[in-house]
Length: 301
Length: 286
Image 1 (tube, rainbow over the protein chains, first blue to last red):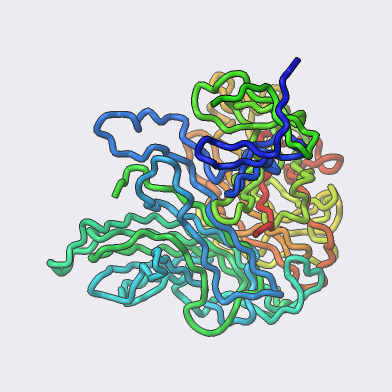
Image 2 (image 1 turned 120 degrees about the vertical axis):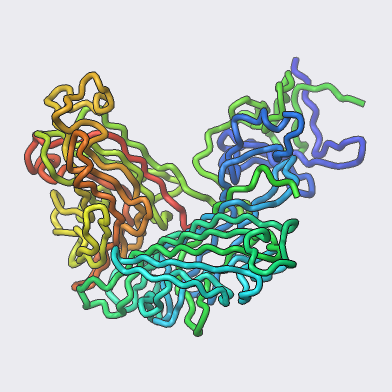
């Protein structure tokens, strides 16, 4: 006869108590525990924010300093703005939870996605900025500490560029004459079934390669940019820039905006990304945003 | 002190949990079946999506996959998920490789979103306004392909390509498209033709459509070692402007067919084959 112990709690020799669940899971599930020791079941079985590498042998190779687990891009953060709760900006984490054995939280690649973004009027200049753990801007307004190059190509033919390093943000388009349209909304565009002006419906994503280098900044020699860190951002987006719904002309943009930043001074690791307008007071009516991050497996300090 | 038992159960519950009788070979997750059996399987339950580090929000969900080896008039993918039904999907991503069959000729693949399984891409008065880029083809802007309101033949967007040139039955089987022993040098086959790529689709009710994707799609209108007539396109998006959008249901899938073919309409000789994956991004956030 199978032995059965009935008890509400089991405890370890150290006194940590775990409370047993009183019901069975409705589907095969993972066994979970709250921070107070209440055992339960994952609603959808196992969950993870990333997939692990199938080949970790390099971790045990003598002399190697790679982190213990090389992983797929992590789904890090997600936010939704609705018209009943507008936002002037969206700031998402880009630093995922560290795996056991990961010794340095260094972000290598970020994909910032946005979809169905709508604005309160035509004044929104879509912009991103990377933030460090203290919420300080990583892109700074300083020709002494950074070199900045940007290049725009949109609607297939138009292109332009800038090399002004005195910018403290990363706009999604060089020519702001084509910023996305918008309008005050009393209902949600996502469920809208009647026409209205200002349906920006901005969609796209930003892919950012980032190498922070707190150890190798060169501040003694002028003109040497790069030892402090590098950023390459490629931003892809599409939106309509004419407010009037009755206009049937091609008042829409598909754009690619590339930015390259070289730092002379120490550049902190990016932990967040902010999506906002760098001028004006226009807010977002709605939109869905999410971040995916790949960690730098070879960086240990 | 170790207490040995096979089962444990809460005093106030009726759900005995059966302990594993062996240790896993390496660290594994702990899993519980609906009958309370605890195990540490080498392969855990299948994940349908990743969960965000912050807030435990769902990421891309793989909703459907269509792999068509024998060419057919219509290829479809559907979101039949009860966990993330169409009304919960904010954005779809469609990944594909489609080959066309018939006569080595130029044509296009047409895509239509479906609502409740029906194709009426434009509904009442949803006109296409937007652009798509075709830098490889030397074209910069178009009014996108959204066209018509009928169930059969109307479409949201279209992608130019060249149908492969092998005759049936070789030419109507997808896995023959990459078989060099089957490929005539003088005619389009496999990688010479077809379309490959992906696009995203904003799933608003009236305001919806294919949206920007840097990959877009890639197709070819030539054959042999001539690399002329490539299509390397980015999709624009369609928006309702001229009349009222009337869609009240969310998109639950996508159909595609050859521009000269179809499923009961067009010329039945023109067929498509390949694969489509349907991914969805739930609107759920914490």
